[in-house]
Image 1 (cartoon, rainbow, N blue to C red):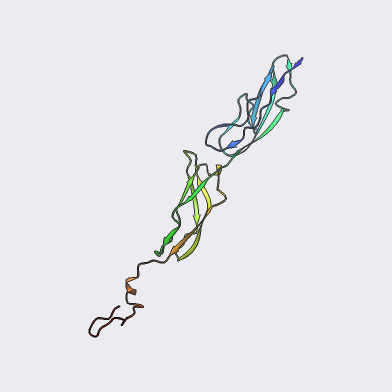
Image 2: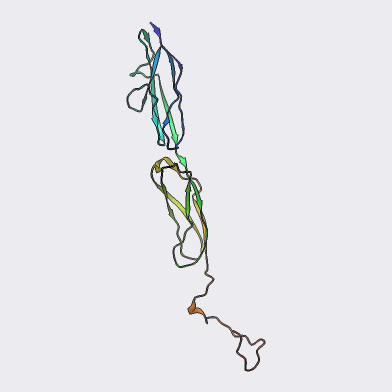
Length: 193
């Protein structure tokens, strides 16, 4: 009996998470037979396995011969195993104003998260809020939300910020440190404060 043959082997179709269903391998072609695919330990099918989420996937395939033909592969002894990766999508972090005036309360730059797929909702955990005057660092320590496991944080996830002294004097300090000047003062006039 004649052999069925693979004319085009399926290949890995890796990519980056985009929220859409993705075919994990390219379509294989065969002469006098049909290529069957299986994702992980799932069922064999002529349909190309698909996935949406970021991760590592294994697609196995074999050639099932037409009647009166033979094949070197079978469901028990597949022709090939293809490892496919859907990479995590890298988020974009944009920090807002990083200069604050002391107000006695915790302050921190506002973080805007970009490069999020429509329909997903990603929130960041930010540490580094500060009250004291001086230089401080805000840092993203983690992310959560819809499909958060399909995202990765950028390498730069910190923001330097500064809190400066308040310019308006405290009313209780009005007279503290006031000095009298006698320069240009004439007897009987009120001193210059």
